[in-house]
Image 1 (tube, one colour):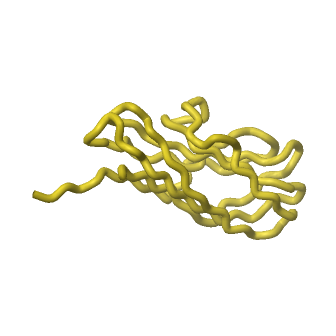
Image 2: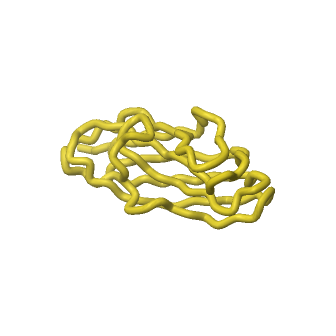
Length: 130
């Protein structure tokens, strides 16, 4: 008998990026239905962004839930230092043990204080049960 691990993927941005330190929801996956409450979830994400005119860093957070108030999955803000107007490919992976059988995941982006908005070019968020 075979077994198919649950997964959820999106590459559709939900919001335009904003300047400053506002945490902006960029991606939210569908509900990830795990067959086990204690299943380990692997999160993989990738972004291609053009930095805003005054942007010196781009920060990325992974959250459990559908908005910027969800439980933070990543241990800390993932910071990528950048130069204004440059194009950057940023990607990483993380893990989560949600302790529940079903939840969505959200990727948020924020920038340094006073920076102008960066521009989203391409990206994705993938969550799957290991």
